[in-house]
Image 1 (cartoon, rainbow, N blue to C red):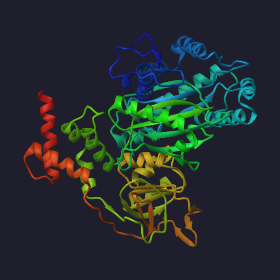
Image 2 (cartoon, one colour):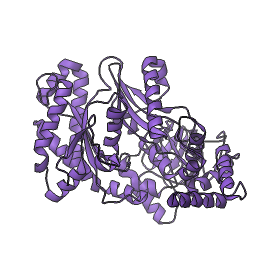
Image 3 (cartoon, rainbow, N blue to C red):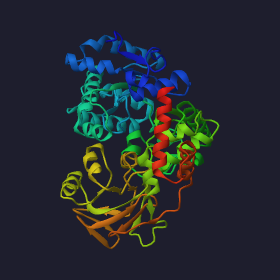
Image 4 (cartoon, rainbow, N blue to C red):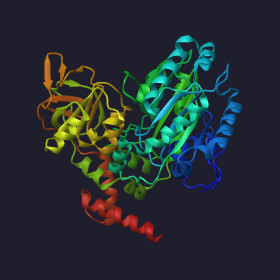
Length: 507
């Protein structure tokens, strides 16, 4: 076991490879952005994965306390702030960080360090409304995640939050997700403590999630969601109506330009589609996290082909074949679409492509019960949360009335290859029924969703065959060059993939 358990993002360990296995995916990305790329990251430190295992073995954080206090002192020095201070208080977030991305499955505590005293200090700094909003968010989140109201002692808050984040590794939703994604329960998690930046601060402020490419279609233009005067959970939680990322270009052209340059730098470093969380605080842009982004099958094929053709990527045709799973190629080859959604009941955002038909159910438990009876299910929710993960797993498709392209429902659906329509705002969910204007659709009624166009239909509606996808056609041609077989065969793609893997193993 390492004697040192905590590392700052701007001074990560040089001897740990891969860094994500030691500091978690979130911590590794902060280290890359801060220490390697020089991007604007709020000062932060990571409590390592070995510390998680030590906590489990020892049943507490006693072993970590001295190092934790020294690390908080390091944040205080970097920011000229004081944890629990009467003026310029240091306020932090405590976030999970599994070695393998598990979006939304584990816990986060924001605005930690607020108490009656620091609330007054923050009021003097940011104004009463902003400070009160931050304090209320903190108390509500802490109560929900830790299980009791926050102590007035910031150090007690910090230890309780770290334990809660570590404990969330074993939450039912995290276990369900790991089982679905074939992630080992033995990995464990890191935790990140990061200085808060406020997307609710005076001046031009807000928060967003940006993808360097469209995770649904693979289109190379950056996309995502943006929300002015908000904190991060407002965007990913799907509880507020977001704006498209491009709205930021109109509202703040200089910040937009800086963000585009940073997205390009991250894509060049990771050599892949990136999912980037950011906050603007009083006109200053901060990056909070970057990771390879979850994508649909169609996007996976398009992005792999583009990576082999664009000079900025050190990627060739064989790499492109290895970057795509056989199941993704099969899904794209067999995909259907309603195209323009003619005759649809309503429309939302096309969050994850594909056609899904089934009976509408409004809770995750009902969806699971119906699926176990052999029914095909569409899970219909105002928005989904990590607690709905078992119902999302059981469903053929997902329909939500709020949220954007980076909401929980959209991200999980794309990763799992399930059709999803989100933000269908004309739908109003009641007691075992949803309405669209004069139409009432009850629990168990059959509906169809088209995650490629955002259309929602009454009844079982069959999609039309989609035109041949040019990216998958090119990928199959590259596979045929390796095998010498026909250029439109899924079997030849599988053979080509096996040949490339065998060549790599023998090299």
